Structures are given as C-alpha cells and as structure tokens.
Image (cartoon, rainbow, N blue to C red; front, top):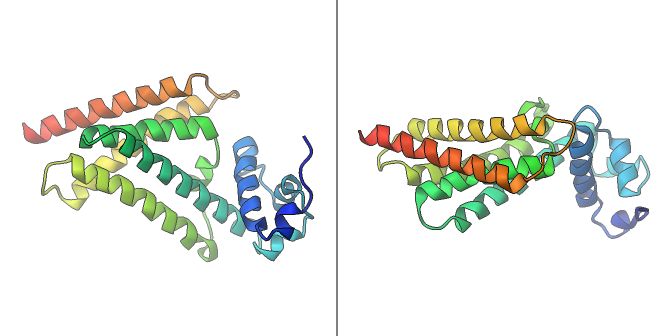
Length: 205
C-alpha cells in the first residue's frame, strides 16, 4: 500500500504523524531498529522534515514514549470504568487491560521502561508516567482499607503492575504475536483479582 507523500506536513500535523509512525515502527522493530529516517519514510516526507519538529532521535523517541504512556493510561482508565463500581474489580481490570495492550500493540514498552532519556527529553516522558501512576494509585487506594499509607498503596501498585507486565512480556517474547489476546487479558484480570482478594484478606485478618 502506498503512503501519502508530505500530506501530513502540508496540513500542519506532521508531528502527530511522525509520532504515530514512530510508535508503529517501534512495534515492528523495537528501539534498536528505530531511526528518524525510517519514521520519515513511513510518513512520506523527506529525511530532513522531522528535524523541523524534533531536534534529534531522542526527542522523537521521547514523544513516542509519552504517546504510548498516554494511550496506555487511557486504556487502563477506560477498563476500570467498564468494570463497574467494585474497587477490587476496577483495579483487577487494569491488569487485563495492561496485558491486552502490550500483547495487542507490542509497541514501545521496552522504550518506556528501559530507555535512558537525556535530561532534555526526560520531562515529557515523566509527566505521562506520573499520570499513569496517578490512575493506578487512585484505584489501589480505593480498593485498600481506609487509612492505608501511601507506601502501602504504592507497594500494591508495584506488585500489580509487575505481575501484569511480566505476564504480558513473557507471552510477547515470541517471534509471533500471541493468539487469543482477550483470553490472555482475562487471565491477567483473574490473577490480579485473586492477588487483591488475598492481599485484602491478609490485611483484615
């Protein structure tokens, strides 16, 4: 399929097009296979055009990481809302949503967690990371007994995200995308529900 040439630039939305194509490239090739020239080719613009908006590769990578985090945060918030009013179900649903997102997109999770952005580009990524954690911290605080310390809430979120991430990355590590993403997401939700239920029982016992 041919790509439109320079349409994004002339319409003034080239930064958004570059980020979108950059995220898609990350899903296919990972951070090691990411380059500004490849993203420009995917967007149908010259190799020099991206530098009018992103001064270097790191700036474009940071914009992609921020976009991935923003998208993931929205997916988790939506899943919690769809789960209904029960706080445990709302938090458990985010584990399934997280696993489903990683398995369905395979885009940039290594970038979000492992890439060492320089000081110049770090803040945009960290801002989205804070929003991501704010959603989970609020959901975890609602699920835990009233008066639970910030450290106690943060510890639960850490275990919750680590379990969902580990499960998703184990499945995503193959050469082919896993089948039955919804089934795997449901398993992640069930595992998170079991963990949360057991954790609450220990706190109350």
